[in-house]
Amino acid sequence: MNRRRFLQIAGSSGVIIAAGGVGFLATRTPKDALVPWEQAGSLYSDPLRRALSYAILAPNPHNRQPWLVELKSETEAVLTCDLGRLLPITDPFSRQIVIGLGCFLELFSIAAAAQGYRANIRYFPNGEPDVGLDQGPIAHLSLQQQKGLAGEPLFGHVLERHTNRNAYDANRVIDDAVARRLRAAAPRNIHIGTANGGALLQDLRALTRDAMWTEVRTAEAYQESIDLMRIGRDEIEANPDGIALGGGFLETLKLTGLLSRDSLADPASRAYRIGLSMIEDGAMTSMGFVWIKTDGNSRTAQIEAGRAYLRVALQATADGLAMQPMSQALQEYAAMQPFYETIHDRLAKQSGERVQMLARLGYAQAIGPAPRWPLATRIGPKES
Ligand SMILES: Cc1cc2nc3c(=O)[nH]c(=O)nc-3n(C[C@H](O)[C@H](O)[C@H](O)COP(=O)(O)O)c2cc1C
Image (cartoon, rainbow, N blue to C red; front, top):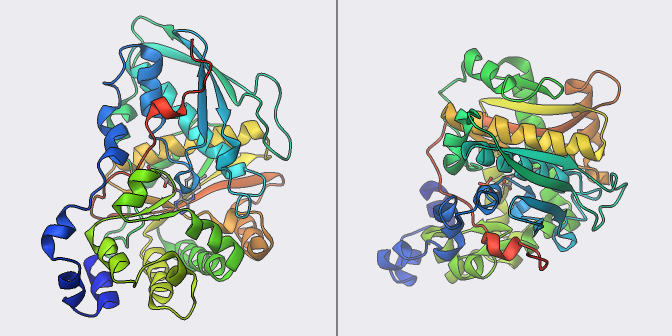
């Protein structure tokens, strides 16, 4: 949350004084929760865990980090989904969870290539799960050393890629050449579209805002997010997943009672109203959108959409763009139905096409990383 918003809520500097002043504000950055970003690539000497230590930095819905890895040998592993980390209200078919696992796999592959290893990834070795995910393997991973394997330039941007939910610079347009590079960042069987001006950009701003407002006003859906909010450093350190509301400003609001899970859920509260206006600020300063479509909606298509999203996000980072998925209109619960239909009418004209990801773009001040559980906690019990 930026300073302007903070002061709007706090009303005066009295709140800061009440919280113990600037010294307090400066000490509230989480430490352990961010260590996986510092240790990526350096904690382990074997190529498999090295690549995995990057893969856990992948974007994923609500930062649930649903990946579980079982190491089979020095160079082989099986990825499964932690079924305790699903989002049953807003992601009833776990489509987005699978997309997040696709992001993980692409990051694994890029990080392996950077060490001179080809990642062979076999999706759903026991067959695709159907409507509900099960404990079956999502993918079998193996590494093969390959002399002269060209690393991917995108690897250089892994540690700078972050989801940026702030307002973007409304005066800085996105060049066509930048939009073209985003569209070219993923393989050809994945359709990537962009809008960086004109009526479509205007429409998508309003549509993503309205869909997010609708989610906030749909108590059950919003509560799913609120339950996953980690407010302040102690909560973030204890559970380095979910939606982190950290930093001195927010921590001060928490201390003074202005920011709590209850106030966020209460339509009469200031925190709730400011939340709605922050959604407006974000959506309406989007200077572009990028979307990813697949033919059909198989589990494999969802994985491939995630792999493509990771590449697009790294390309955006390489081009200095900020990016935030705006997923509400794509979600499969009743309140989203009208938005879902509109977005598919606008962006997916071929029959059977499915919009898997939609994200806003723009230029903004850089932000810091989101928390992660260390890799060791995401490696399954059958380590050999
Ligand atoms: C499938 C998918 C859907 C997402 N939807 C949203 C969204 O609607 N709004 C949002 O702010 N972030 C969204 N995100 C971004 C995640 O919240 C973010 O990746 C996660 O919190 C970790 O933060 P990081 O990307 O900065 O590492 C989505 C990510 C994925 C992979």
